[in-house]
Image (cartoon, rainbow, N blue to C red):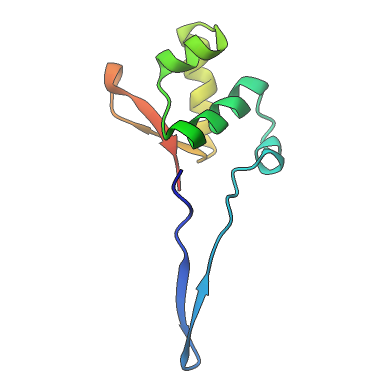
Length: 95
């Protein structure tokens, strides 16, 4: 998983570098009221770098429409982003 980019600022004759921790933890993600599938999907993406609708369906035994709705909710909250179109579509963390 890629870590969030550090913030680099020039301040008062010096440089300030801010390192960010992984915000995609369970406590943070639960604040969005995701269902269990959606939480597990975000953790899946963290471990595997991406997920497809087909992988989501296989992991959670849901229909294509349910997978699409679940993934789109995560996209709308800017946790993951949608890459590609139609059968080439996959989702990755929005970092």
